[in-house]
Image 1 (tube, helix red, strand yellow):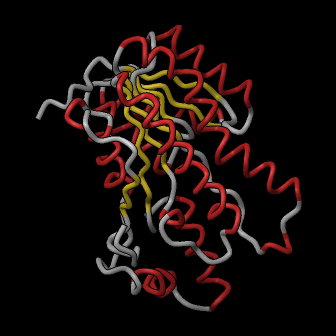
Image 2 (cartoon, helix red, strand yellow):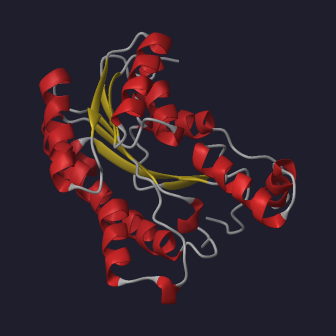
Length: 263
């Protein structure tokens, strides 16, 4: 199936590894020119070289912290200069730290706000006018199953990712007639470096094997396994496609059946 992505410009935030990198690779495999960004320049350049080698795609790597407004403006400007207007935007950012309400200061809340909500708002602001003018745009926000079902101790994430969903749903209606779609994808437990580190920590703290630590999570998942980053990336790529033109304002979980609710 031709997804209509070849020749499009895709900007994927926080994409040197994990879910962002998987999304960038999947889009590149479909023929998109890809702009990636992350804070660690060495890891970012390695990811860019790998993507070029694996897919043959044009890849631009721009070091940036997505919680910093000026960095976001710089990424968008360099993307436009290198490849022209952005057609596909994948908003992504690492999750804010866990903790309880009594642990969180105003500074913690403000930093989580900048990272989780405002990064998506700012990246979208930089590319939306071009999308509306050209009559085509795809914006996909990587959130979490916490927007469907709160996760214990992830107070900041549970609170602010819902803000992303509310913002995206409202904006999707405002730009739908211009050919721009905005959707959210919600990964569950997925085999990323962050989850692997969590399993290692749980294994050490609880005196169990890493396989046992993984089973303590997968036992609650109907599919009885962790997800793979490529499985989320495939959904992102479909949502970026020509075929997904009538799908907007949706929030879709990719969690192996973990979410208990109907929606």
